[in-house]
Every structure is written in structure tokens, then in C-alpha cells.
Amino acid sequence: MPKVAQAWLTALLMLAAAPAVMAESATPMGDPERGAELAPRCTGCHGPEGRSNITRYPSIAGMEPSLFRERMAGLKAGEGGHLLKNMTRGLSEQDIADLAAHFATRE
Image 1: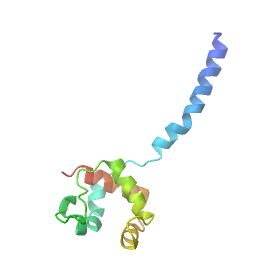
Image 2: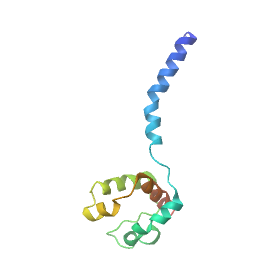
Image 3: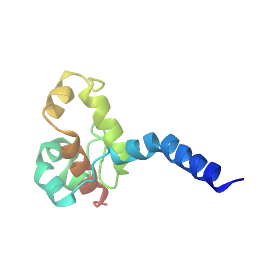
Image 4: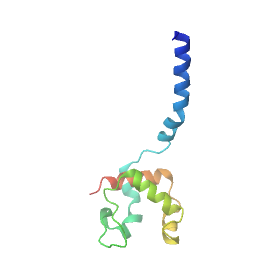
């Protein structure tokens, strides 16, 4: 394959892959220290450090960050009822990423 054609093909492949790369970087990195500052809004029900002793409230300690973010998105959408929707109101994507990073470090 001529070098010019190979260069064009490489450029096209890079452009085609750009949306996937952008989607991955759209998820903010979590700061566990900031998450610790936000954690009291969760630990009242989910227990100290996110370890619940009440079966009604699942433990969130050690939860994989992607799963935590997924569940929080559902709660914000109302999947957990009005109470949990209200509890998550006002949390930004960065706040959720920070909480996810914090609780992932708890065991």
C-alpha cells in the first residue's frame, strides 16, 4: 500500500475511534478525599464507612466505582422512589465520582 494511502487510512481510523475515546474520558475521575467529605449524606442509612447492618439498606463499601455510578444514576432518575431521588438531588457527576472513589476504598 502506498505511504499516502496508508497515512489516510491511519487518519480515518483515528477519527473513527475518537468517539469511543471521548466517551471514556467523559466520566470524571473520583477524588476519595472529597468523597469522604460528601459521605455523611450516605452513611446515615448505609452505615459507617458504607457497611450497613440493616438488610433494607445495602452496603456500599468496596463497591466497584462504575457500579456505584450506575446505581446513583438510577436513583437520580427515581428508581429508588422519591426519598432517594431527593437524597441524590444536587449531586453532580463529579460528586458521584468522588463518592464512588471513596466507598471503593472502604471494605
